[in-house]
Image 1 (cartoon, rainbow, N blue to C red):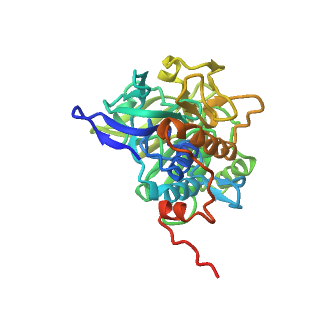
Image 2: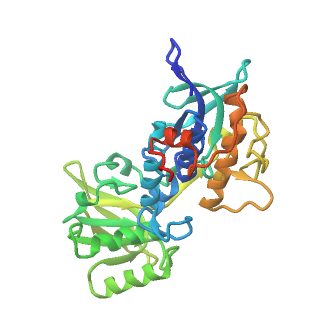
Image 3: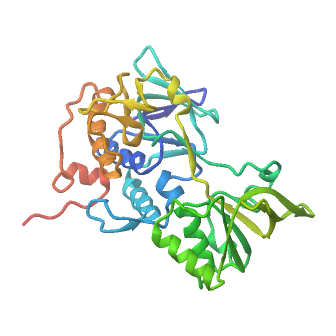
Length: 357
């Protein structure tokens, strides 16, 4: 493993993984089994990618050997699985530059000034850098992270408050239903706001929402947010204009906005990689891009027969790790070992080898 800092603070490492979603996290694991040290960069503030941001509480049923788990549970399990490998995370920053060096390595720089010299680069960025779609009402942004939130980090912090929830997808309905239900996180009131009386959420969630509205446990308003009210520097209400052109006031203590995540290919488009419909073209032997030493796994890549599934991304990670090994260990023959029987892998994982009769 290589891990060092140059005098100017540049981090020398074996691999930089761009993206901390499930596929990026599993790439850490597959590299770790080959004793390849990885640093992980993600534009979001926490690991987890789409599952953690879009459906942390929604069940996932197609992860091998796990009959059901939520998006956040999947992320937590992956983080536990990669813990033995000590990957370093650089969150809340975007990789802005990838430049090949004369010695075969890559210089990688982020939007926050973090710099790497790395032997390999793994792009596991989903469909690009994900940023929450903002509610575009002039002046509202100054309440962000105090009364305006684009994700829920601490549900208990909203208990007993008057909440307005904007959105028409499962994230918006999940949280609206959660805060309207009896329990420790129950809000004083919940008003769901969506631009139309139609949803991108599961029918079951929509049915639950309408039932709660009929029982006066929450309220649903069709309309667009056209303004807000404040008093003493605090957000006190939203102005919502309906299809009847009537503007209604929605009083609130906190505003939760779930308009989805906006994917953007961003600087990846300038790294000299073959791109097809905003996806990176790879081979299916090593999942290498057209630039040797740069690999792409998960939803960011494309190849004949590509299926955008988490389990497909996991498979791609294994082959990409073996494809990267010659760049990291050019003088070492890398052989396939099995975690069930390899004493060496047991040492790498920090587990005790089973005794044999």
